[in-house]
Length: 286
Image 1 (cartoon, rainbow, N blue to C red):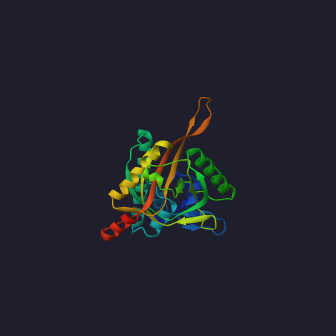
Image 2: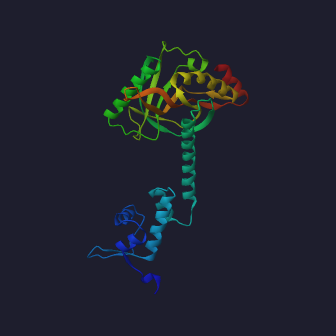
Image 3: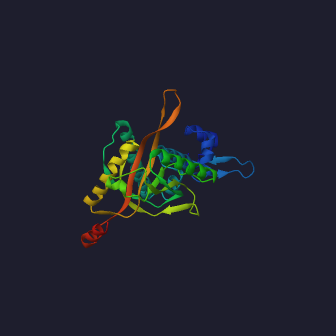
């Protein structure tokens, strides 16, 4: 019998692939699978050997971690695997970043290890105020800003942390004084497009370091970042800021959960590279 003569019902296909009927129907809804034919009167679906092979391929690619869009693009042009390769390279980069963060948490590492990173354009719901420093004041203002964002129906981007920036430069010079008022900006990551409350940060090169520890000890290392910028021939071109990657929740003696000053935090500032005369001029002006 020629394989073209094999036609299966949806139950047979689902059983052969060890999935539910709903899974097969979802593949069709997602544009990944088209039945060999569909009875116009009864609405019954019938599937071919090609459909069976397609389902197996879809399940295999899902098992590798590819999302629906990536699988659809591959099925549209199976002879070109480059989109899948790019997608997997992106996943590896994200997994490497996640692994590094988890290692920082597990090992309790709080050393100074700066790195350059490329930050793509990002949208933030922004609120600013002039206030004195200190963890308690910053936390209170941040919570109010976050509450306002939720009340306004802002769609939060859960993949990124709240970003705090300030125009104060004493942090980098080792002369931080919490009693001096400065301008602070809380930037809450959002999936929404720009408007009067939402600003797009342009793509930037950021010199930063990851910190796992107490907020007070974080500032002790901020001064080193300015020295590191000079060593690498980099000129700061924007305010210093920090992204709260993970505020830790701990239980107190009464068994109630509460937020502490222990954070997984990234501190840094945007930079540009200086070369030759441009470098000398920039250092003289800074």
